[in-house]
Amino acid sequence: MYKSILLAADGSENSFRAAEETLNFINKDTMVTILNVIQIEKSKDAVLHGENTVKQQKEKIAKIIDLYNKENVNYNVIFERGLPDETVVKVSNNGAYNIIVLGNRGLNALQGMMMGSVSHKVAKRANIPVMIVK
View 1 (tube, rainbow, N blue to C red):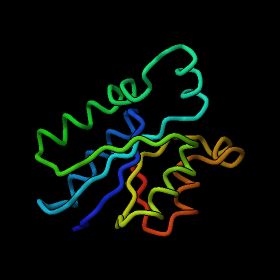
View 2 (view 1 turned 30 degrees about the vertical axis):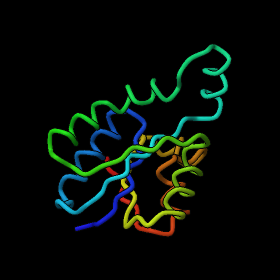
View 3 (view 1 turned 90 degrees about the vertical axis):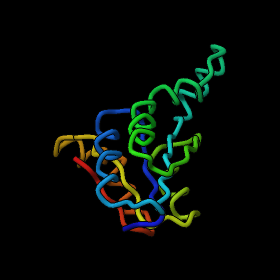
View 4 (view 1 turned 180 degrees about the horizontal axis):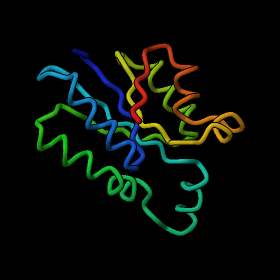
């Protein structure tokens, strides 16, 4: 069992599956930190249009929060602005987390080779174990 898990969640179905997977290796003492990264470009556009990006991001991860409330999971939510891969690595390397859990974006082989995925970049750069959930 892990004591402290960093769950990178963007509101996608893949990140929800990652949240579900954490239920398999936690106990009552485990703290799950849900990290949602607000991408810089989206954040700038939202400010220009008078939108509340944190409120929008909370709505995106509401399904995960509902799941964790239903399952009585100890969790907290943090929002960071930046590039997703760099921000997840920065938060994980500066925190006291035991593992990062995140969903696989599902790039095909060519896309993954050309661009790289967030999950791949996090796995390469993080100082702690990374679980990528398909």
